Image 1: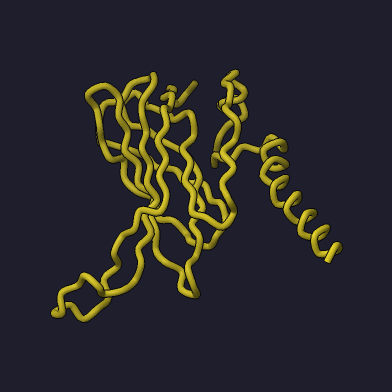
Image 2: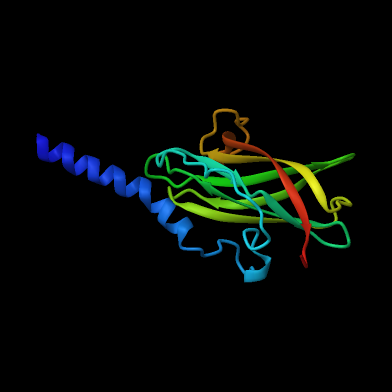
Length: 179
């Protein structure tokens, strides 16, 4: 019994230390991000990392986003979508951005429900005229559970009903894409 407790304790320490080791490696999670464009290289301070439980659905939004001269934006974040049962459900990340009078849904990102943490990138092109500065981002992770509980009987195929499984609200700083 004592060996089981020791093994469980060691496994717990390893699972909790893995995200910290990845963050300390200094690798950027943003695809195609130049080292000079890294938020840490610009002197931005980060809050303590969000440490969700490994068996739950989770969604995060990065502290910074990019804005281009035409007013279009790009936001970044990460998600974990846990598989329920043997079937892998469809899922989506949806983001709404608010800055002053501008409030628009930026679109969605198709999520993979395999229990692993993944990065997402959403480009909001032609949805508004955003400028450099603070904005509020609201994100939702929707999972589409199979079944036809709400489908009319005339529809022969099962309908996927969306379920809100994770939510994130954060103030983001929109920076010029060339900063």
